[in-house]
Amino acid sequence: MRARGPGTDLEAHIADITGFVERSDLRDVTLVAHSYAAAPVTGAAGRLSDRLERVVYVDSAPFAADMRMLDLMPPQTADQLRRQVRRVWRRAEAAHAAV
View 1 (cartoon, rainbow, N blue to C red):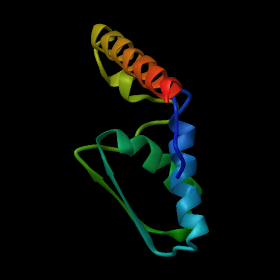
View 2: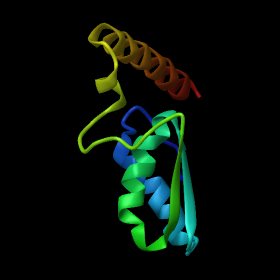
View 3: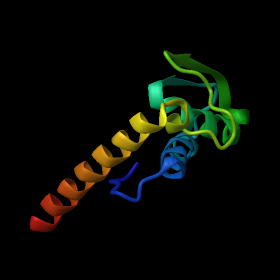
View 4: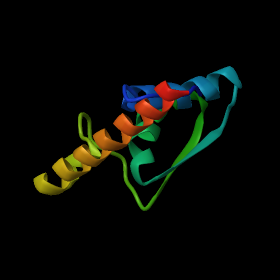
């Protein structure tokens, strides 16, 4: 895994999981997903099927293809969350630039 910034997306999280399992040459892996992790774990499971023993979802479930967590929220809530995330990333970028 590597440091990520505002451009981090679901694909980056899937790549981190699959990369770790493959670099470590792990077999009979159990992936455990809680909440948002259902999305990257489901994606990684599809790529690691020959290395998996099981996938466990805790307070979550696998997402359908092209579905996002925001799709499960009322539109106003999703918009508010997007605005909050943008504010946090802008602050983080400013703090990083100041270092």
